[in-house]
View 1 (cartoon, rainbow, N blue to C red):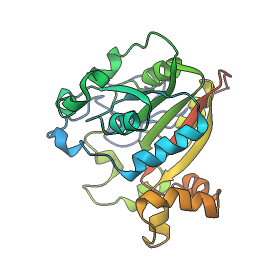
View 2 (view 1 turned 135 degrees about the vertical axis):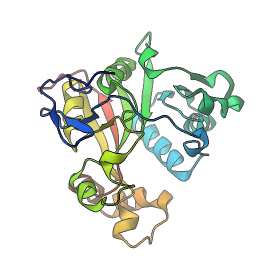
View 3 (view 1 turned 180 degrees about the vertical axis):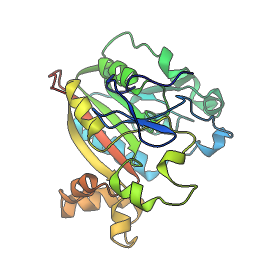
View 4 (view 1 turned 120 degrees about the vertical axis):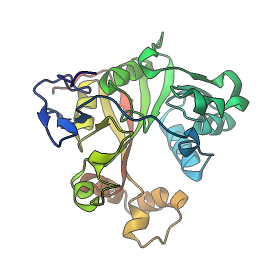
Length: 267
């Protein structure tokens, strides 16, 4: 595969070397592997997981933001979130490009399917929620996939996203071991600079509803709160605290909910 000449998120040109392995977009800050090819999972079980309290927490939050219950999970893995959503009364479906992971979700029947993300072509705009949870860093054209996801949402629908925070300033300084540096991650085609992805989403007619730093508070509070209670506890005691963590780049991920408004912003 040839070296990328355009940013896979914002389509900007003039990519410049960031490291020996990554090119950087000067417009949005997205980092893209020079080869444009990510490693393949050696064992899908590494990415398969069962339901956890965080799934139910996010479903509860989504329920407060929309009355609709039609949810589509892009990159659903072994189907844990689809299963949790279905049990909570959502009409939930999804797909994953790894047939081995889908094979682990056989009990979900036709709720999930094996499909390459680049071949996903939603036929209407009827979903209340489209979820891309740690997906964008793995696909060749994240901007193209996001446009399709936004197009699949009804008016005022919700886009639920999570991406690693490895391109943030804190990660660059803390992640120093050869096995943990952000530019050495073999499975990630891209890393999204803080607020570069967010600014781009605003140009696509979306506005942020929730922007959280993934798992910052148990770190800041010495592990005193269980993971499934952390987010709610922070919002009850200080609604701005998690947003502050997000802005500072604290946490190993950025977890967001965006609402489709249809109002295009300026890049």
